[in-house]
Image: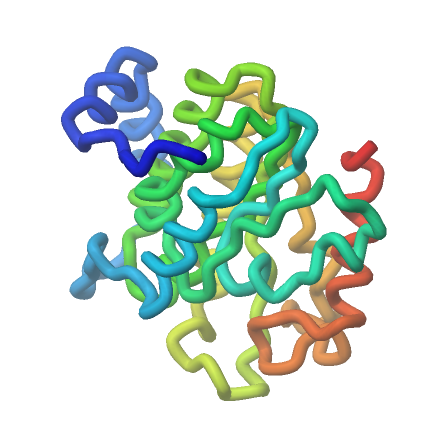
Length: 239
């Protein structure tokens, strides 16, 4: 059973300062495209966030585990069935944002998994969290895992495209520039942090730059064909 605790913000700030995050954040800010600053809220958590977070803490851990960490796109995947293996753990929470992942990240690195695959951020974009803040949180996620579970192999994935033709998630659509810029920063983070980046974004694009209609059920989430395509990209990293 895991201890029901989280890192205090002050401790996290000191840890990240020690590793030079402020310098990287300044570089990220300098390259960000100019945008307006609509209201946003770092404290937002999905309705069932705490229920799922507490459940995750109660599950047994093995150092041979592979974690899939993210939001609903991860949560909806039946990873054990899709991959045909029992050593994978679903750590997706529908609606989650990067701040929510940071809040529950101790449960991940405390388990010292063998690998962790991370896909998070599209809900941040939809909730108008600034691109630079999202990228800054990516560095925090990576560095927490690296410090507290150095044997864990980190695989960070680029954001998927969306398709506004479906009209179901209007807050997620028409933000392609944000997605593309964040994905560029994810690739730079891979070089800076010496972690594996998996660029899944191009494989899901149609000729007009949208999420392929036959791979999604609503312009945001993947259908089963989309999951099988995703699995095909990830499999080389899963042995």
